[in-house]
Length: 381
Image (cartoon, rainbow, N blue to C red; front, side, top):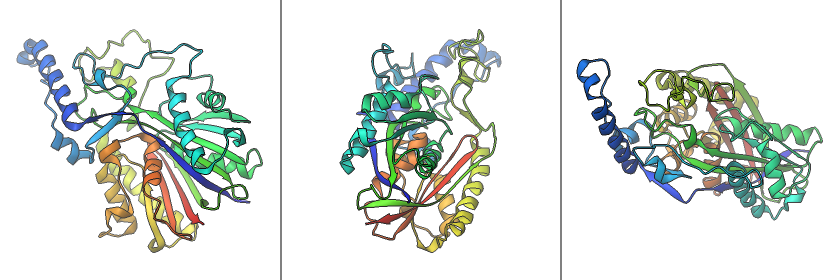
């Protein structure tokens, strides 16, 4: 018995925001803030905010646009955040809805019925609530059998979810598992922060993991996995039920750098993340390829986490050689931006059709925690 990937599904929002649109809104906010704080800026008690620009964003990240669930409020200089209407408890939640959309696409590819699925794992960075588990809600609206649970390992949630699904199959708990990665990343992004306002987008992916004896003829055998975590504060989001209504929260109208809502959103020390994560991931891939019995020269493609173009290029060069073509580590950042756990699955979904039987690839994630996951797969047809 083996655990395999039978199919993946990808759901993309209708709206997108280009760098140029984002920069226009941000710079309008900068003008407004600098005008309102002109006296303090002149006195030297506050620093003037600086403009952003599209070339800076693309050079720093490789991002050109991002898909979003709530476009107009993000581009409103007076709001600069998504505004997603609350739904009644009797309605499907937004996160469950986009997970269901992606899951249906994965099921359609195989002709699998929802009731044939034994478990649902919602593995993502940005869970909409604490409980009940979003996965149980997805189970309800899809009509799957068995059970469901949520898990969060930040940007590595998809690969950790894959390994959890494989364990459920090996343990006899399930023969068919849906791993869903719904990510509304724009909801945890501070669009008033010049260094980060461009990073994230929204999307949902799903992975159907099954026992090989029920999988379709064409599938992906999971031949080896490795999961790693190492605590770091360099990527953090402090939002939670113990502090989301803290009295010092000021709606981000206070001084930049002071704690308020600003540390209840995504914050990172980008330089430290780059310096520490790149060698961590490159070394993990190299070591685990040997443990998997995979010669790096035979690794046809790496579907890496989509966080930053420069980071992905450097990891690819460290693993595959200095002159490696980026096609061996395809990037979807330009169109989707960073979509947290879903990024490597988007790359896999879009850039795997040219694999022949026996070809080997790597799905790899890395992010806050720090966390990293490597899943080696081989095409079976």
